[in-house]
Length: 111
Image 1 (spheres, rainbow, N blue to C red):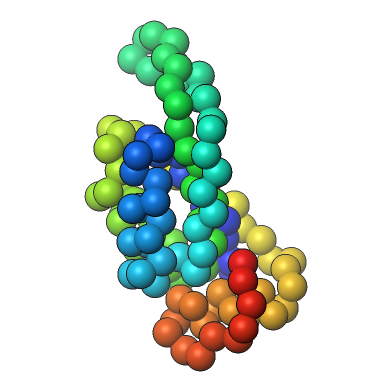
Image 2: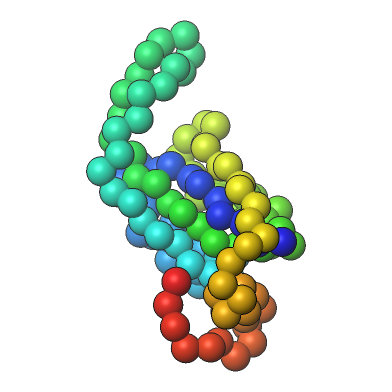
């Protein structure tokens, strides 16, 4: 099973986190979506902060290690980590993702 994992982070942490997750083969690809403004309730108060959304592509097998690594890198006490499974995708993309995570040969292309 493949996953898209949504993680919000402070803008200044996004690129470093994305690069580490890909370098450590926990993610095949991370898209960085800047310019978010999050409004949320925290410790009884309504808070508002700028954030960046990471769209992380991984597999179910890699998810436990990915989650643990995100938690270790994340500055928030309770980081947003939401995994959405997908079973329908371009077969070549699925093959590329498995290769990116397993260290095998990668087909040409981008995510």
